[in-house]
Image 1 (spheres, rainbow over the protein chains, first blue to last red):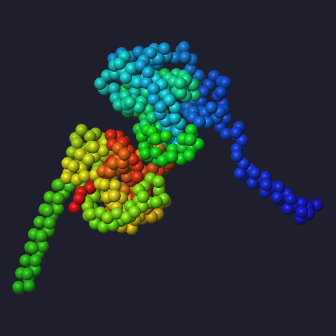
Image 2 (cartoon, chains in turn purple, brown; image 1 turned 90 degrees about the vertical axis):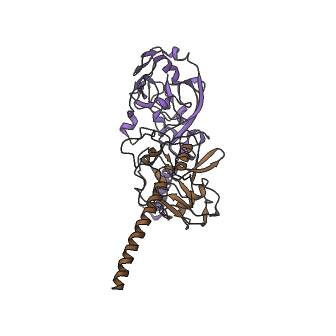
Length: 241
Length: 227
C-alpha cells in the first residue's frame, strides 16, 4: 500500500536521480570514441593525446607506410617528378611556431618543421600560367592553394611537429601549414601535388558552407591549449597567443 | 500683366538657379565622385566602458567633416588603380585586399583622406551614442548565417545598416581602414565578427587592430574630407 510517506520518498528519489542525470559531468568514456588507436587506420579523433589538438580527417584511411610513400608532383611544370621522404628531408629546413585554427572554432599551437615550397619549385619549375596547386591526400581529401599564398613566409610543408615526426593523426608524412587560413586549407597526408592554371574549390568547400578562400576572419577562437576560453581574434594568422 | 511678367521672371531665375546649382554640384562630384554626408561639428560620446575592444568612454568634440556614404567599391578603386582586379560582377562590391597605404593613396588622389577613429565612430554612432548604427537593438536577422566565409554584396544593399547621418554598412559588410595608428598597427572599424558559421554585426564602438601591410578579403575602406 502506498502511504503518503512512501509516495513522497519515491518522488524524492526520482527527483534526485533526475537532478544527478541533469548536472553530472559526462563520463570520460562517453565522449567521442577512440576508434583508431592501435589499428591500421586513422581518422577523426578527439580523445586521449588529441584532446589538446583535435584530429579531423575527411575519411578514415589506412596508415601510410614511410618506405612506400612518394610525393608525386605534376601538372603545369617543366619537370614533373616524384620525391621520397629521404629526399625532401635533405631540403633546407624551415621551422615555425604557428597556431592551427579550425573553422569549427578551436585552435592549437605547435612548432612545425619542414621546408619552403620554393625547394620543390626549384626542381620542377612551374610554368608561368600555373596559378596554384591542388593537393591530393591519402583520405581522398583535395584542396587548392594559390602559389602566391604557398610562397608566403608563413607557409611551409611540414614533416615534423614539436620536434617529432608527424604522427599519422597529424598528417604523416607531409602536410601544409598555412596559418592565416582555416584548418581545412591545411591539407595533410599529401600524396600528390598538381600545378593548375585556375582556382578550384576543395573537398570541404564543395560539400559544406565553407569559403574556397578560407582566410581566417575576425571573430572568436576557443584555443584547446588555453582551456577553450574564448579569445577575440582580428583575422588572419593568430599571433598574440 | 506685371504680375505675370514677374512670374515669368521668377520662373527664368529659378531655372537659371537650378541650372547653376546643378553645374556646381556636378563640378563637386567630379572632385569627389562618391557621395558624402556632412557630419556636423560638436561633441559626441566615444568608447564604451563595458567593452575591452573599444576606447575608454569619454566626450570628444570634433569639427565638421564629410564622410563617404558608402565603402569604396571595386569599380571606383580600379578607376584610380587599373591594375586592381576582381571577379566579373563584383564592380559594386566593396573593394578589399588593399593595404593601408593603397587606401590612403586612393583617398589622396580624390582630395580626401582616411577618417580618424573618432570621425569614424561619430559617423556610425550619431549624436545619440547608438550601439549600432541603426539604434540600440541587435537585429533579429543575422547577416548571412551558416557560411564560413564572407559574402560580398553591393555597397548600401543592407537597408537596416544605415547610421543617423545616412551612412551605409558601418556595422556589417567589410572592416574599414582608418587613419589611426596604435603601436604600429592600424585601427580598423565596423565589419562582421565570425562565430563559427554565424556572424554578428560590430557595435559602433568596437575596434580591431591590423598590420598596415596586410591585405584581407574582409577589409576595405571609405574616405573622409575636412570641411
